[in-house]
Image (cartoon, rainbow, N blue to C red; front, side, top):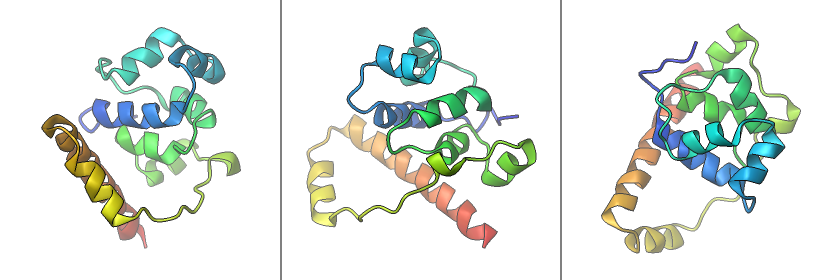
Length: 139
């Protein structure tokens, strides 16, 4: 089961925003085959409990550039936990290589953000660093 103490509502909401792409929330919920109300609760970070892996799989299968493992990690389930539960990403959600961002552009964008936005970026960076540490410790 997901570790509710490790569930990061804000990170999950960021992932959903990216996954939605240009679609409306309503269209995204239809594409995923899930309740619009539940999707909006997750997107607004108002749902207290983490969603179940089955729901996350539906979302991941219809996400743009966000993968099952990212969602699972944000609710406290690591890749090893996924294998134990039989929740493994299929080829359609496999990670694709991306081009690294230009550091100058990233810093320029960061400097133009409000303090609240910067705190959110820092929280997301901590999330990614923790995820990276766990992935590297498997090797």
